[in-house]
Image 1 (tube, rainbow, N blue to C red):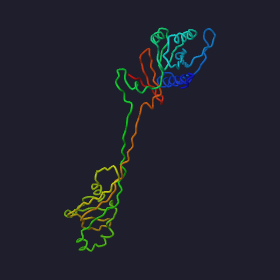
Image 2: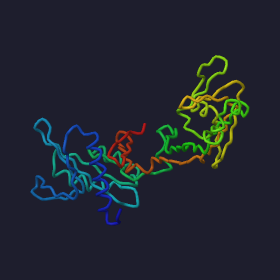
Image 3: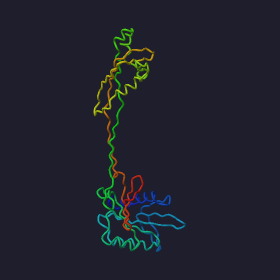
Image 4: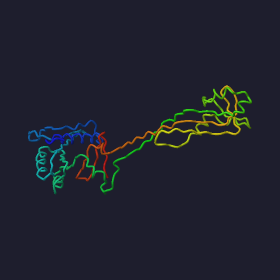
Length: 288
């Protein structure tokens, strides 16, 4: 905000526009900046912030005098605003500052029908507390861990050499070790029933171990009386299945949500003690 007060005036204008948009019962209220109004005396007077709306045939007008001072507001500033408002019967007058009010100024304003507000940026040390001093949640951190898919390097059937030799299946040793596991079945040698697909067995052989770095695994499972049935119906006694796979390192990502990054302003209504946060997306919430 600039030192000439205009920056603070526009800040207040934007904050009040957000509040009216979020909470106002009237639609399409436009909050204006630097407006000159003609009073009962015929003289025009300048007001920093102004808006009006019509309800049940009655026009309701509100003005805000903004004080971008480095010190608290004194009673004489309240008097100056009261003098301006006397020329506009029925208009609602507010005074806004970001520093606060001197002793007695708040009551003085209230007794003269002027609403005293503090409209300011967020104070990270004090605003994340309730009226009773209880802390409010400000920051949420989410640690995300993504597990990339496994990389199967090889899946090999280790066939029973004696069975291969006895049944003249030498061609399987060199050419059918690597295969598509989705189309290969295992059969129980005693019952002649299919016990599982090789692809299912492969999933059971993969460990749940999670390393912080990429790691290669070799797993072997031995069999007693089990046969591998190939896609073309060829049947051969199985000695073991050897699986080699790589588990890539987990991908980690830390996401932080800091409420301070999403709060545009804090508004304190000194007359009622209400305190409100206005967010950058235009939403508002009361601080209990």
